[in-house]
Length: 256
Ligand code: MN
Image 1 (cartoon, rainbow, N blue to C red):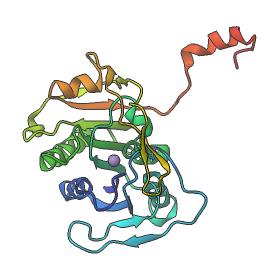
Image 2 (image 1 turned 135 degrees about the vertical axis):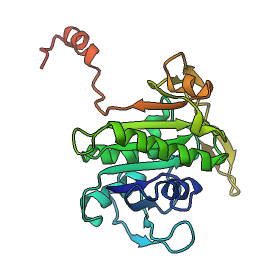
Image 3 (image 1 turned 120 degrees about the horizontal axis):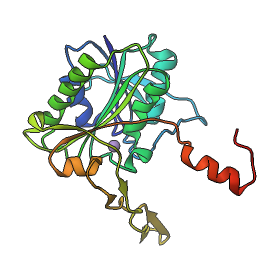
Protein backbone atom coordinates (compact mmCIF):
# COMPACT_ATOMS: atom_id res chain seq x y z
CA UNK A 1 0.00 0.00 0.00
CA UNK A 2 1.15 3.51 -0.81
CA UNK A 3 0.09 6.38 1.43
CA UNK A 4 0.33 10.11 0.76
CA UNK A 5 0.39 12.22 3.92
CA UNK A 6 -0.18 16.00 4.03
CA UNK A 7 -1.23 18.63 6.55
CA UNK A 8 -2.07 22.32 6.80
CA UNK A 9 0.04 23.37 9.80
CA UNK A 10 3.22 23.19 7.73
CA UNK A 11 5.93 20.56 7.34
CA UNK A 12 7.54 21.38 10.70
CA UNK A 13 4.35 20.83 12.69
CA UNK A 14 4.65 18.13 15.36
CA UNK A 15 1.31 16.65 14.32
CA UNK A 16 2.61 15.75 10.87
CA UNK A 17 5.74 14.04 12.16
CA UNK A 18 3.65 12.16 14.72
CA UNK A 19 1.22 10.91 12.06
CA UNK A 20 4.02 9.87 9.72
CA UNK A 21 5.82 8.08 12.54
CA UNK A 22 2.66 6.34 13.70
CA UNK A 23 1.94 5.06 10.19
CA UNK A 24 5.35 3.45 9.70
CA UNK A 25 4.90 -0.13 8.55
CA UNK A 26 1.46 0.37 7.03
CA UNK A 27 2.96 0.88 3.61
CA UNK A 28 5.17 3.13 1.55
CA UNK A 29 4.75 6.72 2.77
CA UNK A 30 5.29 9.95 0.85
CA UNK A 31 4.83 13.31 2.56
CA UNK A 32 3.86 16.51 0.74
CA UNK A 33 3.23 19.45 3.04
CA UNK A 34 3.13 23.25 2.94
CA UNK A 35 6.29 25.17 3.81
CA UNK A 36 4.38 27.45 6.16
CA UNK A 37 1.34 27.16 8.34
CA UNK A 38 -1.61 27.32 5.96
CA UNK A 39 -4.45 26.73 8.40
CA UNK A 40 -7.76 28.17 7.27
CA UNK A 41 -6.88 28.16 3.59
CA UNK A 42 -9.63 25.70 2.71
CA UNK A 43 -9.32 24.27 -0.81
CA UNK A 44 -7.25 27.17 -2.19
CA UNK A 45 -4.94 26.48 -5.12
CA UNK A 46 -2.06 28.81 -6.01
CA UNK A 47 -2.61 29.85 -9.62
CA UNK A 48 -0.79 33.20 -9.87
CA UNK A 49 2.77 31.97 -9.42
CA UNK A 50 4.69 28.73 -9.82
CA UNK A 51 5.34 26.41 -6.90
CA UNK A 52 8.70 25.23 -5.61
CA UNK A 53 9.24 21.89 -3.93
CA UNK A 54 12.25 21.01 -1.83
CA UNK A 55 13.08 17.88 0.11
CA UNK A 56 13.44 18.45 3.83
CA UNK A 57 16.45 17.15 5.74
CA UNK A 58 16.63 16.62 9.44
CA UNK A 59 15.17 14.70 12.30
CA UNK A 60 11.38 14.18 12.11
CA UNK A 61 11.10 15.72 8.63
CA UNK A 62 13.62 13.67 6.64
CA UNK A 63 12.48 13.27 3.04
CA UNK A 64 9.31 15.33 3.39
CA UNK A 65 8.42 17.13 0.16
CA UNK A 66 7.89 20.78 1.08
CA UNK A 67 5.66 22.91 -1.15
CA UNK A 68 5.58 26.70 -0.92
CA UNK A 69 1.83 26.74 -1.29
CA UNK A 70 -1.38 25.54 0.27
CA UNK A 71 -2.42 22.13 1.58
CA UNK A 72 -4.47 21.55 -1.58
CA UNK A 73 -1.47 22.61 -3.70
CA UNK A 74 0.65 20.03 -1.90
CA UNK A 75 -1.68 17.11 -2.58
CA UNK A 76 -2.56 18.41 -6.03
CA UNK A 77 1.02 18.56 -7.33
CA UNK A 78 1.73 15.17 -5.79
CA UNK A 79 -1.24 13.56 -7.50
CA UNK A 80 -0.88 15.30 -10.85
CA UNK A 81 2.67 14.32 -11.62
CA UNK A 82 5.26 14.87 -8.92
CA UNK A 83 4.55 11.68 -7.01
CA UNK A 84 4.56 9.61 -10.18
CA UNK A 85 1.87 7.18 -9.09
CA UNK A 86 -1.65 7.18 -7.63
CA UNK A 87 -1.52 6.43 -3.90
CA UNK A 88 -3.99 4.05 -2.30
CA UNK A 89 -4.78 6.38 0.59
CA UNK A 90 -4.38 10.05 1.50
CA UNK A 91 -4.02 11.08 5.15
CA UNK A 92 -3.98 14.64 6.48
CA UNK A 93 -2.96 16.02 9.86
CA UNK A 94 -2.75 15.65 12.67
CA UNK A 95 -4.15 19.17 12.94
CA UNK A 96 -3.43 21.49 15.84
CA UNK A 97 -7.04 21.94 17.00
CA UNK A 98 -10.52 20.71 16.16
CA UNK A 99 -12.07 20.64 12.72
CA UNK A 100 -15.70 20.16 13.57
CA UNK A 101 -18.94 21.58 12.19
CA UNK A 102 -18.37 24.67 10.03
CA UNK A 103 -14.60 24.39 10.60
CA UNK A 104 -14.55 21.81 7.85
CA UNK A 105 -15.37 24.49 5.27
CA UNK A 106 -12.33 26.57 6.21
CA UNK A 107 -9.97 23.78 7.16
CA UNK A 108 -6.85 23.14 5.14
CA UNK A 109 -6.52 19.81 6.90
CA UNK A 110 -9.87 18.63 5.58
CA UNK A 111 -9.10 20.22 2.20
CA UNK A 112 -5.86 18.27 1.81
CA UNK A 113 -7.77 15.03 2.38
CA UNK A 114 -10.57 16.26 0.13
CA UNK A 115 -8.08 16.89 -2.67
CA UNK A 116 -7.22 13.20 -2.55
CA UNK A 117 -10.91 12.30 -2.49
CA UNK A 118 -11.56 14.53 -5.53
CA UNK A 119 -8.87 12.59 -7.38
CA UNK A 120 -10.58 9.32 -6.49
CA UNK A 121 -8.38 8.33 -3.57
CA UNK A 122 -9.89 7.39 -0.18
CA UNK A 123 -8.83 9.94 2.40
CA UNK A 124 -8.91 10.66 6.13
CA UNK A 125 -8.35 14.00 7.89
CA UNK A 126 -7.18 13.88 11.52
CA UNK A 127 -7.39 16.67 14.09
CA UNK A 128 -6.81 16.95 17.81
CA UNK A 129 -9.77 18.51 19.59
CA UNK A 130 -7.67 21.07 21.50
CA UNK A 131 -4.76 23.19 20.30
CA UNK A 132 -1.31 22.81 21.82
CA UNK A 133 -0.36 19.23 20.85
CA UNK A 134 -1.28 17.83 24.26
CA UNK A 135 -1.21 14.00 24.25
CA UNK A 136 -0.09 14.01 20.62
CA UNK A 137 1.44 10.53 20.82
CA UNK A 138 -1.88 9.09 21.95
CA UNK A 139 -3.65 10.89 19.12
CA UNK A 140 -1.15 9.53 16.59
CA UNK A 141 -1.56 5.98 17.89
CA UNK A 142 -5.33 6.45 17.65
CA UNK A 143 -5.02 7.75 14.09
CA UNK A 144 -3.09 4.64 13.11
CA UNK A 145 -5.65 2.42 14.81
CA UNK A 146 -8.44 4.16 12.91
CA UNK A 147 -6.56 3.71 9.63
CA UNK A 148 -6.08 0.01 10.34
CA UNK A 149 -9.71 -0.41 11.35
CA UNK A 150 -10.94 1.42 8.25
CA UNK A 151 -8.66 -0.53 5.91
CA UNK A 152 -9.89 -3.79 7.38
CA UNK A 153 -13.51 -2.90 6.61
CA UNK A 154 -13.58 -0.46 3.67
CA UNK A 155 -11.95 -1.72 0.50
CA UNK A 156 -9.46 0.50 -1.27
CA UNK A 157 -9.67 0.87 -5.02
CA UNK A 158 -13.47 1.08 -5.20
CA UNK A 159 -15.56 4.21 -4.71
CA UNK A 160 -13.46 6.73 -2.78
CA UNK A 161 -14.59 7.94 0.63
CA UNK A 162 -13.67 10.86 2.88
CA UNK A 163 -13.57 10.72 6.67
CA UNK A 164 -13.07 13.58 9.13
CA UNK A 165 -11.69 12.40 12.48
CA UNK A 166 -11.42 14.49 15.67
CA UNK A 167 -9.53 13.03 18.60
CA UNK A 168 -9.77 14.27 22.21
CA UNK A 169 -6.41 15.32 23.73
CA UNK A 170 -6.29 12.48 26.18
CA UNK A 171 -3.61 9.99 27.15
CA UNK A 172 -6.24 7.25 26.86
CA UNK A 173 -7.38 8.32 23.37
CA UNK A 174 -6.72 4.81 22.05
CA UNK A 175 -9.33 3.29 24.34
CA UNK A 176 -12.04 5.92 23.85
CA UNK A 177 -15.21 4.89 22.02
CA UNK A 178 -15.29 5.84 18.33
CA UNK A 179 -18.56 7.31 17.11
CA UNK A 180 -19.81 7.89 13.58
CA UNK A 181 -21.15 11.44 13.70
CA UNK A 182 -22.57 14.25 11.59
CA UNK A 183 -21.18 17.78 11.47
CA UNK A 184 -22.58 20.19 14.05
CA UNK A 185 -22.83 23.92 13.50
CA UNK A 186 -21.01 26.84 15.06
CA UNK A 187 -22.26 30.32 15.89
CA UNK A 188 -20.94 32.99 13.57
CA UNK A 189 -17.33 33.96 14.26
CA UNK A 190 -16.42 36.41 16.99
CA UNK A 191 -16.08 40.04 15.79
CA UNK A 192 -13.03 41.18 13.88
CA UNK A 193 -10.29 42.55 16.16
CA UNK A 194 -9.07 46.07 15.43
CA UNK A 195 -5.55 47.12 16.39
CA UNK A 196 -3.17 49.86 15.36
CA UNK A 197 -0.02 48.92 13.45
CA UNK A 198 3.38 50.32 14.56
CA UNK A 199 2.98 52.80 11.67
CA UNK A 200 -0.30 54.03 13.06
CA UNK A 201 -2.55 52.29 10.55
CA UNK A 202 -5.63 50.29 11.51
CA UNK A 203 -5.12 46.53 11.18
CA UNK A 204 -7.69 43.80 11.55
CA UNK A 205 -7.43 40.25 12.87
CA UNK A 206 -10.06 37.69 11.95
CA UNK A 207 -11.81 36.84 15.22
CA UNK A 208 -11.89 33.36 16.72
CA UNK A 209 -14.40 30.78 15.55
CA UNK A 210 -17.78 30.88 17.29
CA UNK A 211 -18.83 28.39 19.94
CA UNK A 212 -20.83 25.35 19.00
CA UNK A 213 -24.48 26.20 18.26
CA UNK A 214 -25.77 22.85 17.03
CA UNK A 215 -23.93 20.41 19.25
CA UNK A 216 -26.69 17.94 20.04
CA UNK A 217 -26.46 14.19 20.18
CA UNK A 218 -25.10 12.76 16.97
CA UNK A 219 -22.83 15.69 16.18
CA UNK A 220 -19.05 15.75 16.16
CA UNK A 221 -19.09 18.40 18.93
CA UNK A 222 -21.23 16.19 21.15
CA UNK A 223 -19.10 13.10 20.60
CA UNK A 224 -15.85 14.87 21.47
CA UNK A 225 -17.44 16.59 24.49
CA UNK A 226 -18.49 13.14 25.71
CA UNK A 227 -14.92 11.90 25.45
CA UNK A 228 -15.30 9.98 22.19
CA UNK A 229 -13.34 9.95 18.94
CA UNK A 230 -15.59 11.52 16.28
CA UNK A 231 -15.58 10.06 12.77
CA UNK A 232 -17.69 11.98 10.23
CA UNK A 233 -18.09 10.72 6.67
CA UNK A 234 -18.03 13.77 4.38
CA UNK A 235 -19.36 14.41 0.89
CA UNK A 236 -18.51 17.25 -1.47
CA UNK A 237 -21.83 17.93 -3.26
CA UNK A 238 -22.96 21.37 -2.00
CA UNK A 239 -26.29 21.20 -3.84
CA UNK A 240 -29.26 21.91 -1.59
CA UNK A 241 -31.31 19.12 -3.10
CA UNK A 242 -34.30 19.74 -0.82
CA UNK A 243 -34.50 23.40 -1.87
CA UNK A 244 -34.50 22.86 -5.63
CA UNK A 245 -38.27 22.55 -5.79
CA UNK A 246 -38.81 25.69 -3.71
CA UNK A 247 -36.53 27.71 -5.98
CA UNK A 248 -38.15 26.33 -9.10
CA UNK A 249 -41.49 27.60 -7.79
CA UNK A 250 -40.15 30.96 -6.58
CA UNK A 251 -38.40 31.74 -9.84
CA UNK A 252 -40.95 30.03 -12.08
CA UNK A 253 -38.15 27.89 -13.48
CA UNK A 254 -38.29 24.34 -14.70
CA UNK A 255 -36.43 21.80 -12.59
CA UNK A 256 -33.49 20.58 -14.65
MN1 MN B 1 -4.14 23.74 10.98
